[in-house]
Image 1 (cartoon, one colour):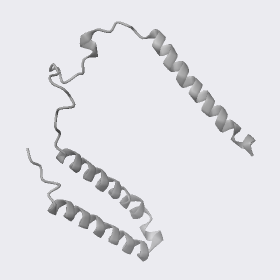
Image 2 (image 1 turned 30 degrees about the horizontal axis):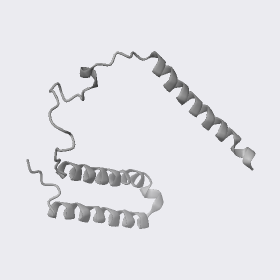
Image 3 (image 1 turned 90 degrees about the vertical axis):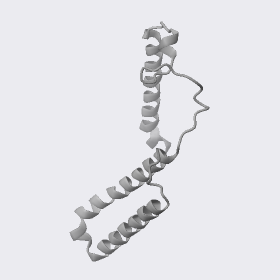
Image 4 (image 1 turned 120 degrees about the vertical axis):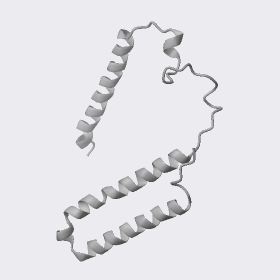
Length: 120
């Protein structure tokens, strides 16, 4: 039974060997002219000031981004359902209607809680 996995082990070893060889060759070939301006973080042409750990970030952007990802992924379920709607019948239509109602309830909850309000 272990011989059935031999091609998988061989490919894993080969890919690992190629990745390590690529890293080794690139470390030999890359230029080694490091200087202070090159090692500084890039901030749109403005010299960095202060510490990165002391800055405070508002979570509003991240909440909106997470909500967008959730609703975007949920909307992806609508396309395959719409393609096979005639084959699956009324039961699938009712199930998708319940799914969309739950999505609308989640959206309304986020709206009522103020997660979609943008404060500047």
